Length: 159
Image 1 (cartoon, rainbow, N blue to C red):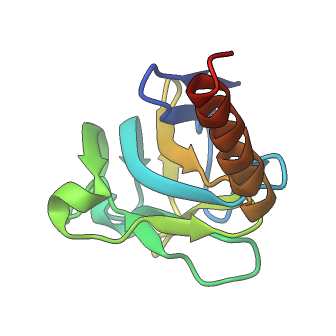
Image 2 (cartoon, rainbow, N blue to C red):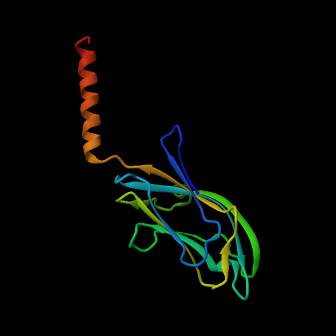
Image 3 (cartoon, rainbow, N blue to C red):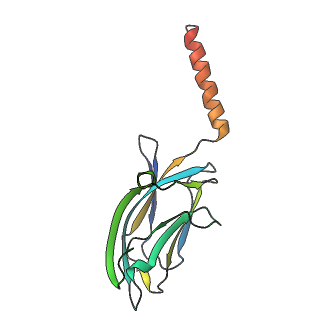
């Protein structure tokens, strides 16, 4: 299950259901309909289970462009060097913590779960939400600038 929404400020949100994911499960999602996208933040509510010698800190999510190394890693259990089941939730706006936005020139994101441990599972009711902006193409910007010039000219001549 995935959901997409837009806020009044123009920021988009895309939620990925990661329930049941294990090592190397992934999603490749077109966020921008062939337009460049900047992922500006992440929100997560995930429950991990690590067993048989695996640690909760061994599981992480990576995101970036398809075919490229991940640009950002989310490690929910970063300091939990033990086995068990734990829920992790949070929100991060990359610019608030000094990180660069994730640039997706094709608008497609590659999102993957990886683990050092072989026995880590993302439990049911686990979700990750990508916060992103669509970058207008140069042609759309020229069109927008042209429309603004026509409106401004029309106001000057009293239309």
